[in-house]
Image (cartoon, rainbow, N blue to C red; front, side):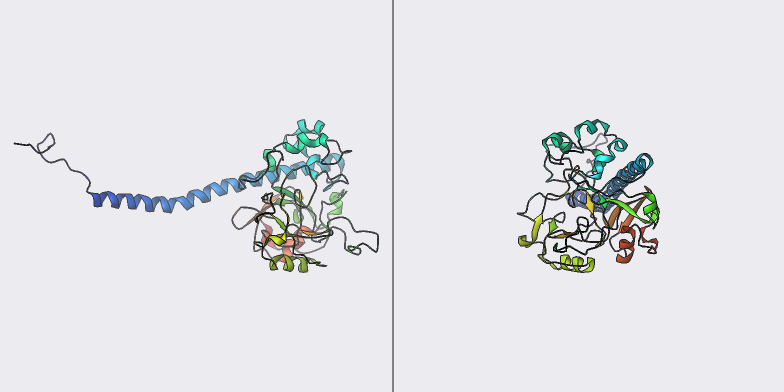
Length: 327
């Protein structure tokens, strides 16, 4: 006679039925589904906080420059070296100073080692930068040139197609040496630093980090923004520059400069010869981190009023700024 399995008490051992097991698995799956967004949000909040700390450190570096040299560093010099090269000691990168020579062009072989250096303070953890070449030190941060679309300084030759365009009204541009007294809108009301995602380094595909070419010739900020918004970015004929965000030593509109022409996370476009609207851009949901000229850090929403965003971008426009850029 075959005996049935039993417990020590002689009764049948209790267990889950298949239906009960499936119910438990479904409940666990539901709980995980409810918790995952909260976990992801917490992680992004930590990444955004880290990004804000980076911007604050860069702002302190700018303040150190003002204290020692009585002016903010140039957005770029005539040889293409960016403002980052001036604030290396403030971001614990003094060892790179001997590897930089302000008398040499940014792409001179002498600068190869510095150009490849990876600096943690220049990278936002919300941007994985999958396509960034290993030979380039990347940056997610940019310096504010202002609200105009002219890339360089105003030409003096009447035959130049950009003759008559106004000078940059931000605080970082070609050979700029802006003093605190030049920022008449107030350092707490004037942007210094914001973000930009790193590009895909290929014109064979389209990504939101790229700088596009609408193949038009806008003469105003409004025209530039409208014409940029009108293109289909999936159409590769509008590709123009994809090597976005590296190397950090390069003073260029696709590596170290941004503009307050369009609101945060708007598409970036260029209009050769010499007209640009590189936009502040991040992977943070809903907006970008913004560093002010007094080293304060704000988070600005994508739907910020355009007039307010442009007012923050100018150093001496006399505009009234509402509370939309408050922490």
